[in-house]
Length: 138
Image 1: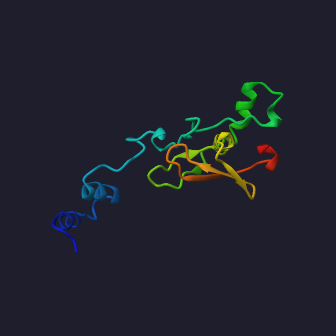
Image 2: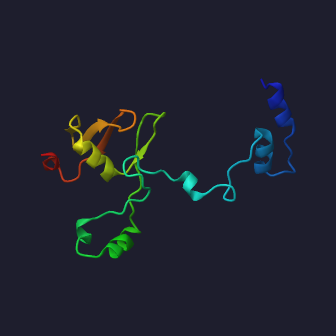
Image 3: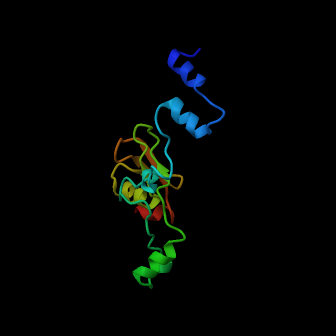
């Protein structure tokens, strides 16, 4: 059942207006649009390094200058792709940043090719894939 406020919103719906206009009127606030928001409003930054796009320093790029590394990584920037499972935290992390963070933590443990530890913000358990095998932790 609808309460009085919801009924008046539904009754105010008009087929002559766009869905967006009807929703704006019904909800009582404007919906986000490219005109009212910036791209940065939707960018997730890494909770460790505080950047969005991490430029990778691969072994294949060791012998080139910094500008060439940036140019090579334009096509494959690392974005925060690991999220904390705690919905109150939900921080994003770059895989390499989280690996370094957990690798430096004395309480982190490795099992089945993954490094397990705690979220730096809420202490929820996080894990990251270990590249190169167990020898990295010795």
